Image 1 (cartoon, rainbow, N blue to C red):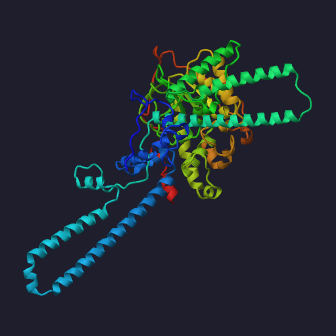
Image 2: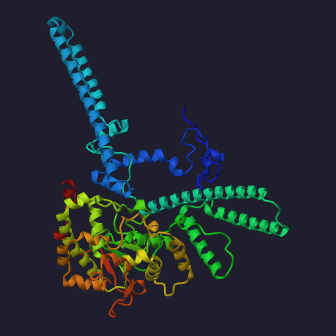
Image 3: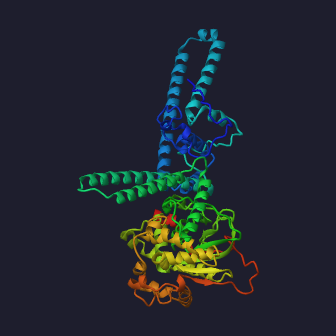
Length: 591
């Protein structure tokens, strides 16, 4: 029986943005029929419709695009292969069933023919016309049944479309589990903010339960104590309770405003942070406590000039710096690559235009991202080559950012490791020389300083990227809350880094390799990057190396630069990694 549609109480017919309370049975809305009616959030209620639409979209994707979709969603490729194998088995079973039915039909047809051949000729002549028509009808019916059995069983509509030559869906493409194609940054940001909003509400509900439990325990303790409080203490406690209740009420109204979108909510919270900073500077009492930094909502923000880039050789800490920048400024950082970092809350993948981001990550010219874009200034994040190349080797061997290869595999791949080092040191040198020779404002930051003094480093980075002449108290307070109050710098990163420390990869380089690495160009480059004394110091003391002056070296453009400044076009031109520096990782993993 078809369910009648419930008329909306909104006479204008427009759907109010926000939480969609109307279908939650616990709040008095909706029919509540079925187990999924009580899910609440819109993404849960639209789950099955979403799966149906995604299945349709996947008919147009090939195997490579489907793998890219897994990476975009942050799902492992092992999950993709497992699902593909499962569906392949199902299709094989379907094929075997169809073949068995076909053989059974052929056997029945042979038996019928044998029986007909045994009939006498006069009977055949009398029923000639009728038998011929019957056989044709039976054959047509058999063909129809066979066609229905061979179909993929998706639905009748696809079976009809498959007969049409103009149908864009090819029969060779198999249906895989519900996934996504490429996802735009706006969708990724909306998902991240929605998840943070949910975590925020769960956090405050948990805090409310904890406070009520503590209040009950205090009341029970006060009853057991001898004596009574003075009237002055009672009056003071009542005032404190009233002020605390008022502050909690105002804070509850801010946690989830009604009838606003998530984007509008993020903009409101940023303006509220500015108001709180103004009250704090004026010596006034804050009307409410700020929202914990891990639950704050992010924003896209336009840039009045060409963007600033975060240029780094792979495995040099760019994801950590992006996370610190986003936590402090509440602005999404971009990237010129479609990587798998969206699952680590870095949602600005493929966002490089000035209408969305101000700070964009790039590995160019180590590799070419997409699309080409312009940059007016750069933060060059460097890491000592011994730790960076070893971390990059682990990344390419394991396919993950957090796993290291075992000692057994390390021993088996000794020759491969040494060949890889000699290739990568050439790429490492070309990469950094490219950026040091660009005639644009450049800030040199070392990874070793970033993990030891993230507060001082991020002050330099924010001032440089946003072109702030004088750092006020606002960003200083933001850095205090986001960085200095954290116990471990790893908790701020997008993922937990590999176990190790500064210089611990140095022991993996043989003495022959070290001698071959230290040519004149390498030594001069290490001096320019602030690693001049590294080779003369035991690696156990590398963690004690003094930081760069002011925790960063700023290079200004030449006096011949135009008034508006020079522009660098990225992802267009020769790469630092040539054919001789390429490594066939797929072949190596198979072997």
